[in-house]
Length: 219
Ligand SMILES: [Mg+2]
Image (cartoon, rainbow, N blue to C red):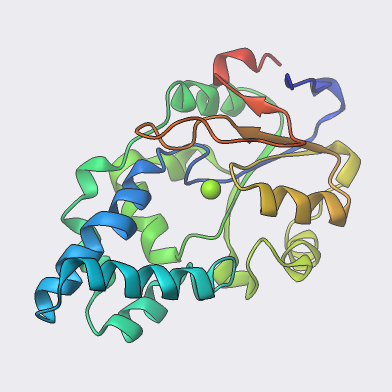
């Protein structure tokens, strides 16, 4: 499905960060490869056993605020997860044309708000690396709201924090579960990302229109 957005009707642009504006490869590589290896080493565990154990925990916590919480994983794994992320921070990169898309939005009259499940410390790490924070009127972390974006309470509280009209709002997010939650809340314009991770194949975007290149978005 091709994106078909009437940009004249839009006042508020809500943008996810990881997998939408920044390459999800950083996060995927860290959680699926780098962290299991380091954790196994620290605990003298077999790497395959460590990976399986972590995968099991990830599955249990998926979509919850804990899954996105560095403090939660630091506590569970007994080491500083944010510190470990620094080892691979060279992988923090914009997705193709994301930066010029943000520059174009900056020149527009839209209210541009980041809505992310990323922990504040991780937002800071990514902002230090990319200066992504410069492009936003507001940056809202689900950790500050107290509910993950998958949860209706996130959207209810967001609308109190940053008033927006659902009909005049667009959300761009690579996470289909999040898009479905936003649709249930009433947000009318929804787009996903065809290829959130530069090193993995395109995702199946199901009922949602997907952006293949930010250059296709003309407003
Ligand atoms: Mg994302």
